[in-house]
Length: 115
Image 1 (cartoon, rainbow, N blue to C red):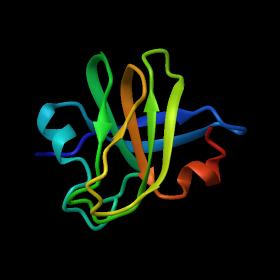
Image 2: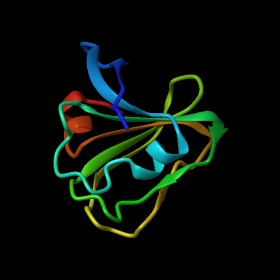
Image 3: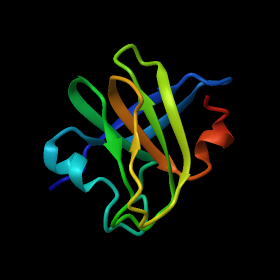
Image 4: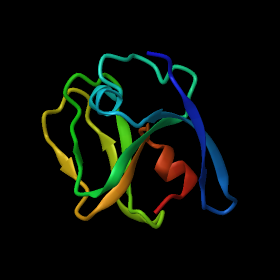
């Protein structure tokens, strides 16, 4: 399955543009970063859901630590989980209805000042 990229603008000071892979199907969202050992030329992955929902993620099968940003339908950050541990079976949930999850390499949220 061919990867698709899009640009996400993070409203930090100054704003930053990230080139991220799009995960907008059940298969792409289920796979995420599982089985990968690099970010494969992108800054992260944007999980896109067809409608707002409570969503969760876990790290089973994921080899790289990452930050997860849960974003609502208005584009507002609902929750950030920093430095998720590779291979963990612990689930993290959005804590509210979200439309997107942005996964970035661990530490990027802190470097960007994303809150």
